[in-house]
Image (cartoon, rainbow, N blue to C red):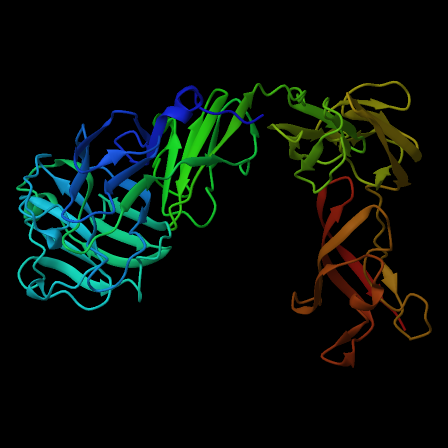
Length: 549
């Protein structure tokens, strides 16, 4: 719904709109009686003033009754009508816009003074329609920026004169916009939508005697040549371009006043970072009606308004506290708000997702007005792990202990024994299970029996290469883990053979009855054997062995 300011509604028929961007960047409405009318000037309508009638030797002016602050921006939009006569001896003299510290202007009787001559200090924009040679006027109708109340272009012109075209005394209303940008100290004049004059620099010190405030107005005059000359203030038209916006809780919004504006006036000014910017930023924490008044370089003025609604964020979103799940299982995560847009950290866009891995999961929910975010951490508890030999060998005829360990969970053996050890004396498959809050796992242990601690050392061998009894050493036995040393000595104690760290099942590494590559003589030899048994005993054996052929 479009809204307008109450003051605009009440005073619209009684006000002349002069758009001044003051400290709080609002419009200054100049109503009936707000302008001081002097000389031959008269008010002819609610928004128009006749500065000179269509007669000789006329001087008239209108002035504001209040000063404006030149530390702030202002934009003034009017139409000027310079009359219908253009002949050299009939049409004159022109209209001037003036900034001055006083509103009293003495009658000069000088048509070429455009009604402002002698007003000093002052800053004047003259729209001159008559060529006065002593003042250095060009032949064309022209515009110039003047100081010290002197129309003499040879001494007091700041900028110009610049031509305005072949003839502006054409009975038409010409659009005029006068703009001051205080922050960048830029003074600009537009005539019929075209920039015709510009000045960059301070104006208070050089031209207004150091005063930061000034009255403003319009003057005109005629001499022996004359015209009816009028000024009309532009009135604003209502438009409906800006649309209502809705945000949650509070919002910082960048607005766009659209193209084609010379000046922008946003209000209420307090909520804007720069209420004079075409694209200001606004921070809103409650529903607010925003107004925009925009003036174009052609002087057209538009009023627009829209609402920024601040609504509470009622999105139903609560993923709940962090959760743990068991290995191999999954859990659904669901947003309570339906009919919205969902953006999960997984890339999913559905209202619910199912997850089975550890991690932090987040979601953003957008219902078209509000946005809310939440996240939840999911941890995964593993099934218990059993550490135990897959199979093992134990000694027969003696009890053995199976050992198993778990990182999490209680161990139980198949016979009901609890704990990490089980005493056995038979071979077979033994099953151990581990249980925790996430479930149970089992592992089988294959047990073999072997003859532990048994060994046999022969006392005779016949190395005749018949494949039988050709090597001397401990007989193959499961009870022997390794032969750490096998040493053979002759009868005089000389070492003739030695082997280390061999298996009892590898007879080819035992003594084959030779010495230095030659067959040893038959007879009795001494052996020294060091054994490591599978029952963890270490033995040193000494004895005699007879070599026969």
